[in-house]
Length: 92
Image (cartoon, rainbow, N blue to C red; front, side, top):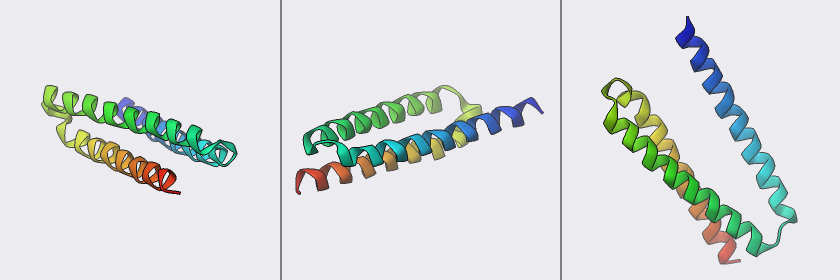
């Protein structure tokens, strides 16, 4: 039963994280273009670092490998999305 509780806590945390990202993106409307690009670059770097750490955990623990794949893929997708946003902001 404890495993389910941790799973729920993690799901709730990731949902809340997503909501916070959306609120942050809304705030970008009031930022200068340069500030927005800088913040997106920081977020992209964090996504890249997260993916790296997840890949290390994936290698280190056989029991969690299957669960880690989705997280690794999601971190990569987030990094790509941020790169697209950065490119669009720079080319405006």
